[in-house]
Length: 153
Image (cartoon, rainbow, N blue to C red):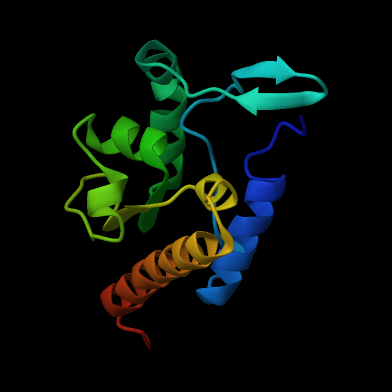
């Protein structure tokens, strides 16, 4: 509703994870792979619907333009939609999250859970575990960037 990515509950989860990983949110460019919010109304709530391949493809030029303009030193895909849009339909966050990937998109590239997945976890124990993995994956990218730049890890 605000027209910006990650400003609601998932944004608060992302903010917390970035802080715990030692990353300053102001130093991070955050964008969406799909530039519109597809939803189904349920009372006063808007329930997010996963974008299809055509919608992802239609938004690809904007994503490519952002990457070309920014030339990021690191890229972290949050969730399956972003990861598959960037790395191919065969990519599985459940199996490959946290891995550093070889990619022409940026020197340091990885993928992890979408913050909303933590909000949808079935119980507090699962939320805590997923949040720990999100934080560890973000910290891993920060560490890889520091190593690449020759700074303290």
